[in-house]
Amino acid sequence: MALWLVACSSSGASVSYTGKEHPRAVGPEQIESHAGSEPLPGYRVIGVVTARCTLLEGASGVFESPCSKEAMLGLARERASIVGGHAVVDSECRERLVDKMVENVDGGSVETTTRTEIICQATVARRERGAVMPPRRKRSPSPLRATEHIDVGGTRVGVSFERDPAAPPSKPRDERDVGELAAFPQDHPRLGVVVAECVQDCARSTAFRAVRKKAALVGALSIAELRCEPIGQRWRCRATLVGER
Image (tube, rainbow, N blue to C red; front, side, top):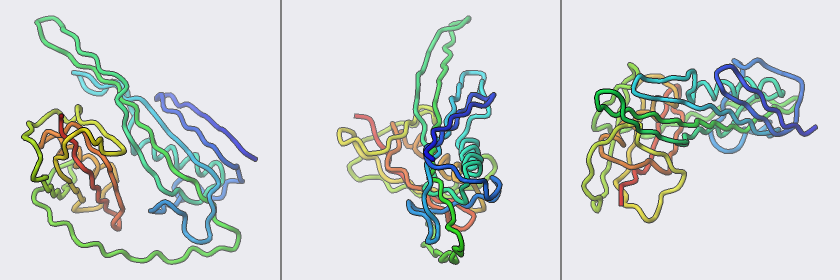
């Protein structure tokens, strides 16, 4: 049976699902996460879940919460459990700047308010009857040769940045002003490539945040071609930095 399910929470988040529904097999905390774009042998795709929310930020901080990539991935796992999934595959999140308002307040100061939409999507997979989950192959990626370390919420993240020889000069900017693009815009200069890897166990969002922080420090207009991969219980994220024309 094909379904299109939508639900809203009190935090303003919404979750939608397109696909087939099956009896619940496991709870949200038992939903597996498979890296890559295809489920492991013995699993089949049953649908796609999307979770989104809007984050409002201003001079006084975050106005609406909780709205984060981690929270949306949690909602996606809950929905995957409800529709009978055993795992989520190819989980990916992105941010989209909805609008930005700048206004003068008393005393001549300037206050900036931004509204950002966070969208997370994952493919839901169900284990075939009688299938046995094969052991995961241990990956041994080359260790990151970090040139510096950035603190993200108390987690130490190693960062490496390779600046493009032809990159134009750029000045640091506010992290909130760094955008995110799926593909690199050909009409903009390439500043270089940044790689961030947690030194200890962390969430994907931690490594991603380190990439954004480094992008802001080098004055990038946006990050593009973001790729994140799990390394045990840690994460490594890589992105190309986009400069201003």
